[in-house]
Length: 176
Image 1: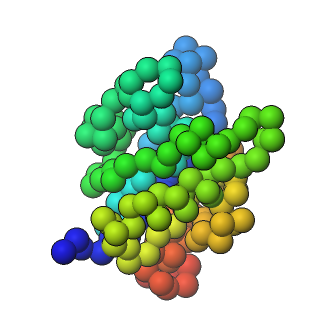
Image 2: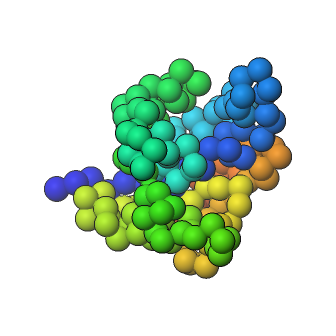
């Protein structure tokens, strides 16, 4: 029988970075101070992760080609950025798999998470779960437990406390 897990549906941009674009790198790099807070969450909750971020496209086969990396490769990438104990169970589906139409401009992340829970919940029985993102994107519309970061700042100690509280069932601020 599978062990019940705490699960975080994780966005990257605006959570593990502050959207500060590095022109030379051509990306928004992951920031150490945010990773330190994520490590605190992992240590306190033993959470596992599902990638709901656009970064999931590195792990998905699409019409443009095969996945650029594996789950194990992504876990290694996260370790090279300082995470400790980061365990990735998978990703949410592509926007296209949820019949996303860019002309409608409707957020589908909440729908993608709900679909993952439906399709994978039996394989990964949950204690608790939470979505961590810097934008709602239909998350509250699906009535999902949600902790929002300020995308200009990323993951802070206060937000990490909220995530820990959500996964432990205690009020934020207790147990820190």
